[in-house]
Image (cartoon, rainbow over all chains, first blue to last red):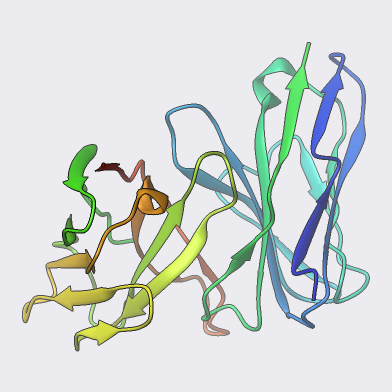
Length: 112
Length: 114
């Protein structure tokens, strides 16, 4: 098992550009989520999904879209990148929502 | 959501037990206490969780006070590889379906001293 795989590992964007951060898991987990981590702060939940076709907002959803067309994949879309979205993004999954989560290694995103 | 309070940093000598405290005085009766750690800039790693009783696994022990208002994570024989930021989290339910989010605070930066 590869676990939770995030791509790319690093990305630099210009303000106003759009991009998709990829997250895939091969553990057949129903629950997946996206967090962002800013310097000196803990992780903040952006969006989550309890299964294919079901998504919901977390603490800081503005500027981000998600979809869950398959159990394996949970991409995070930045519609129009802003410098405030410069952060490290982590994807996580668990068998169900009430079980410990497995995290990917993160995507480090810089918006110029 | 119940909030947690942790010391910002701690040191521990290599080979000794590292005891990391966490206060969660507003925890609800059905909320679990989870511990994760984050080494360097890697993704957080699950360590242990519990509801009322003390728990132990291959990584650590979790001691929860009888009133459940605080807990302590114990790493019995700390090694240099245990240097990390440790997060104490109380799990909150979002809906009747058991959906949940993990609210991460700023954690405790544990440094293991050779």
